[in-house]
Image 1 (spheres, rainbow, N blue to C red):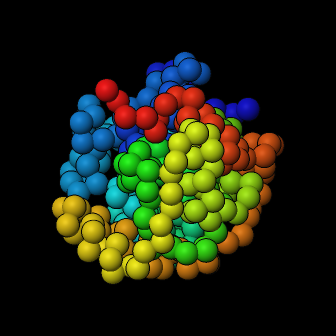
Image 2 (tube, rainbow, N blue to C red):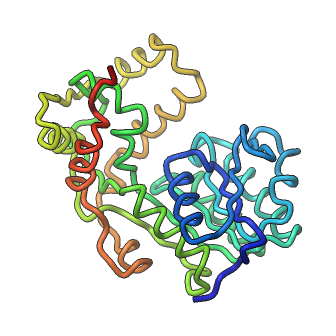
Amino acid sequence: MTTFHSSQFPVLIVGGTGKTGRRVAKRLAALGLPVRIGSRQGTPAFDWENPDTWAVALEGVSAAYITYYPDLAVPGAADAVGELARLAVRKGVKRLVLLSGRGEPEAQRAEQALQASGADWTIIRASWFAENFSESFFREPVLAGDLALPVQGVREPFIHADDIADIVVAALTDARHIGELYEVTGPRLITFAEATAEIAKATRRDIHFTPIPHDVFMQGLAADGVPDDVAALIDELFSSVLDGRNEYLTDGVQRALGRAPRDFAEFAQAGAAARVWEQVK
């Protein structure tokens, strides 16, 4: 195994408080490797909307894991990723690992920008996270017992964030992953209704999935006060990305880690054991 950093130089985790970022930070710390959390509240701060913060955050680091907020699907994301990657290389930070998305043209533009930057790159192109049901905008409806979304029978190979974090850490610490693009999925295709049923089974709760028209869903987001930029992202994901284009499995986890990906049922059972779908009293 060839490492890209010593104990003196931290790894910058852009989005270090997010679903995958905090898992990567925990794993690197367990290996005795220092990390720098790239967030608006970090020291030094990192803010995608303020490029003046980027150079300071990159100062003295050995490698970087890059996630884009709010999502690589949004316009301008590829340009920002490319600018950050080129800056990193100029500052001597050549080892870059990017979290990308499946079926998103802007995400693939970001991949190309990273590859053209001169970095020693690894790209992890991920399907929808299982953790959207436990740590994101699906959690509250699941808690309420009714998840209503504008999807019918489309199937998604939900990926566990722990699998992604395992690959990121491998990519940051092993030269064999340089130049690899890992498209990662879970081990099976399931509908959102079936995913909801898995959670209901694991929690022994009555939780329903309700397909609703797209315009009704968007009106509900507006009524809930969801910011326009976030609503536009959700609109893109549910109107374009979830059109069946990603209804296939890949071997990315197996290629990267030498093992099968975690199943959604395992995710649901672990979440139930951790009581993530129970109201805090």
